[in-house]
Image 1 (cartoon, rainbow, N blue to C red):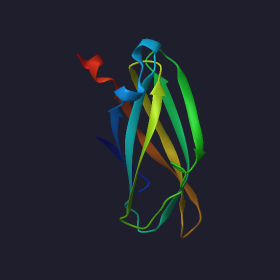
Image 2 (tube, rainbow, N blue to C red):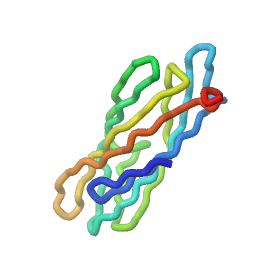
Image 3 (cartoon, rainbow, N blue to C red):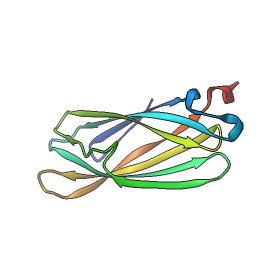
Length: 128
């Protein structure tokens, strides 16, 4: 698991290769990732947006952004955690992702950026 704290919010990531949803012969590799977000601030925060940078090991790069995560914009009081699972498809058996969330301080209504640490997605057979 990889974790990073920025702006008082901790983001932890775990990745999982999804062989049942992958087709290596056709260059389709599916990964799931579990993200845990924990508010270490003394104020409540709301996750407004996400921005992802996704890289395949063949040099392809793409960006994904949008409101919230998995269809919600969670609100976290101090000390609270929110966890979700999502997925990413790659054209190669290895890749990398990182990004950030735009969060809102619910007291001041000001926005701030929380970094999502870079993490790798590697099909288990690639390590052999």
